[in-house]
Length: 335
Image (cartoon, rainbow, N blue to C red):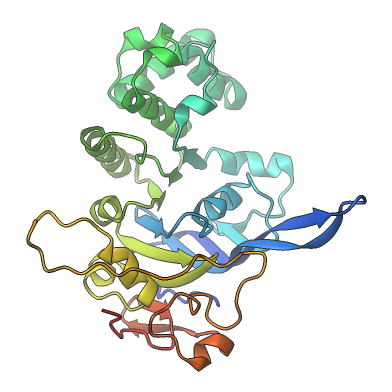
């Protein structure tokens, strides 16, 4: 069901998704014939505005990381449209896509896995400029040193190997690589989930500073709702490849409309020992994305599901200004 986000007149749309689907084929038998599809992302539509941070949350396997990889072209789009800066990019040829590569970058959860352990960090970052610019060796070194300093590292780090850095420092290197070509859009895929809490705060602060300095737009994929609440402007909730709720951080955290969102928020740890807060325990497992349930995708685990939820897919509606949900009983508490 397409998401009809009301466009903010003061903000321009940088990225727009229309009916994006990503299916992974299931093959079997001696001839490896197709037997079905894993529906990882199911009909996602949204708008990301210039300069904003949009969080995407949900349980593992909900499709949030696959959506990010599909936007960047790391996964082939099954159907739908990806519009970046007013241009549909899903069908562009390789040469035509190159100019958008500079504008769209990604910060991965594990930067160590994407670094050559036998290559010095400075040389790894220089490769970005070798591929996309005609800079001289001296100019590339100067740019890399400037990048390292931009993310809180030093010139002396240029000649070190990946294993000589801490996890937080390696993530800063990942950030440096992502901003090297001065992009306008960065996907942060669980960018701080592997870091200690104190280091998380430092990296998030750095991302905020870079956003303000370079007018970056972030798609912030995370399972940590506390981090999302601090870092993002709006939040999109996904379940089994579907979008179930979208709203500002204030609206979604203070008045969640969808039962699944309420369950997620109830799992956030509270700082007080004697808090009367009650955690919502969902029953059952997430359905098989290769054989999703009819009607509402969440009805098999929803404590307030009715017969209609099993047969009728809920309509995406705006229940409050800029606050959307797809639920037959949106706004009803499940506590």
